[in-house]
Image (tube, rainbow, N blue to C red; front, side, top):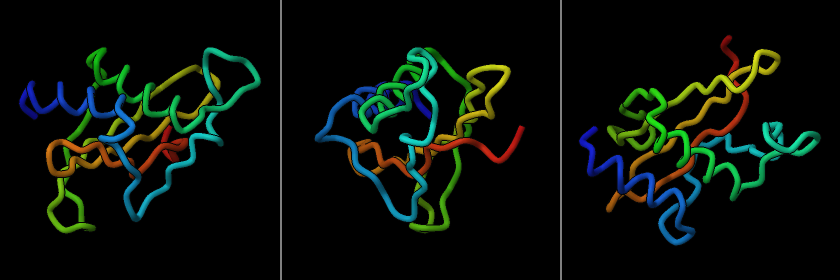
Length: 111
């Protein structure tokens, strides 16, 4: 992904009018423990900020072509947050104008 596209995606993750949830999706931040606030879970807003922060910090991601919609581009991250928790699986589809489309935010099934 070119740096400008990534920069715009990060900005759009933080803007309510430039992000949305796609379909199909498993976007369940309310089931994922928040790391900085013990006993609390992510909110939808917090999940978007977390994704933007991880991308801005240079977290490793993969680009993938989606089957639905066919050929759409998405980024995928497996984010290890602690030794005791399973990784968080994140998938963000890139829409027109680098619109951030949330597809996945949940615990990963992988270790």
